[in-house]
Length: 379
Image (cartoon, rainbow, N blue to C red; front, side):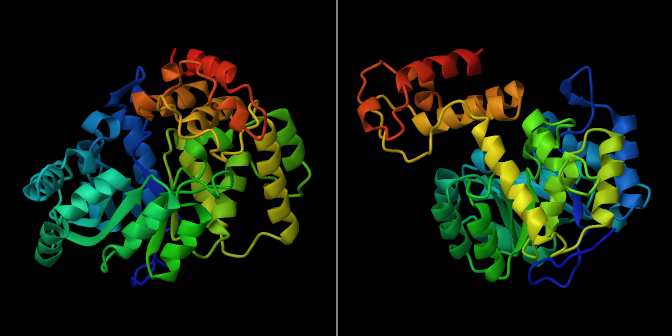
């Protein structure tokens, strides 16, 4: 296992962290973790040098934290740093911080959380927590040792990310979605550098886009590009090594669901380093990015000239989700993303007023594509 720096902290994380959101389940029921298989996977990872586990209140319908508490018995708790998250959307008043944290400590069978995050911050939840001064109970928990470091995970635009980073002086770390396809999405590469320059450790989630970049074999045009390299890497390793190549990346989480995934990713992490990819290899990853984008059927550039829609439809986001379903051959993932989109922003709200189409520089038949998108994604 290779180890990296973690912002301003005098601690080295393993290059690979274990994300406990996609553990193997019984009969596809997210709440029924296949405990023997999952235990074997987690302990294999820890035994081979993984020292960072990431879970959260809602993972596996609230079954992840109690299960991780079980797995970390028999001496395993002392071998890892444990991360979990305050459910931001459930917090109504400052006292809720302690109420949820204390339940999480009990679930996890531990007296402290090493890395505690405000979960899934976006503008509204950030403003709510900031305005109620959630930092007062957080700092009391830091002082009494129930948590050791405070950070946040993030899902919004870069300007909101800047506001959060600058809105509290004592962040130790943050967690962002980042991969070679999402360099400009949400916090993106700008957020990675913005946080790192301010001394924050940056934990990467969705480094393989929920497995979309790990398809083996990948779509034919992508497979042809990867075959040009002399490296005998699967698509998953290309995605991971691209992340590890960047010194601002503190560690990469992987939500592994089979022992094979764990074994392969541990092996990949063992040969990771910063600055290892050649200019030609970095250029190859950019070409893969470009070809993936060319697989998108709707030529939307997210210029947002079509907005605001008088009926609330988030046209660029609907099109992005539809395109991702085609690009990554992942209809289930796209439908899940569409369900996360607020109902008032979904395509079914289109009344075919036609106001958007004359504004589109790409001359997209927006109304017809919205119909197709809603039919596919709402099923």
